Length: 251
Image (cartoon, rainbow, N blue to C red; front, side):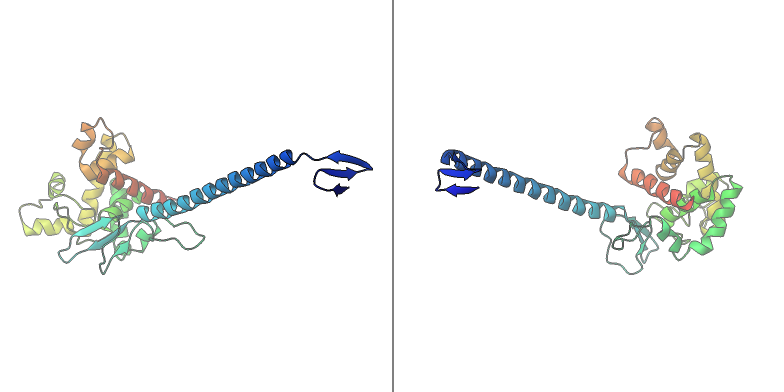
């Protein structure tokens, strides 16, 4: 085939006319299709970039940190952590290694007090006839295994037992310094916390999430909302965090 000028081309011994207007229209059509394709590619790349950014943000939001201040108050959160010495990541490291998913829950087992607290927590759980992994997960979320932890609301020790709860199980924590000290003793604290958790599980027919919500917000709050997790962000995050730790430990 060979072209003859701009208006005709020859193929197999025959001449064929060329319509200049059709050529221009086809060229314009190809240019339009190219622009459309480039716009689509740009949009797809932008979406992929945004997805990666939001994924990193979600990973960081799920990471849980904990530290104890000078007054012995435990601070736990999943927002940007304070610049504080002694800060420990409980649930997962703030960033996963390249090409690896974060190993959730394993960080709790590396906390300084875990080895010392584990025998008390396991013995208390078995005494209360509940899963030791659940009790350990609660203690990790409550105090990060810090036996000296005291919250601003007055919760004490390893499982952050409230004085009123301790008195319910026969340990007077309000009246004397000796009673408060007794509640913070790891073995006693683990027993009280485990018995309370066991009673909550029985109250809510074995539903772990409702029992955990009641452990955090009180059984009255769960009852108030029709035996559902109360719509408190702190409680909802607490239940999710403890269940995540529990599933990891129970494997």
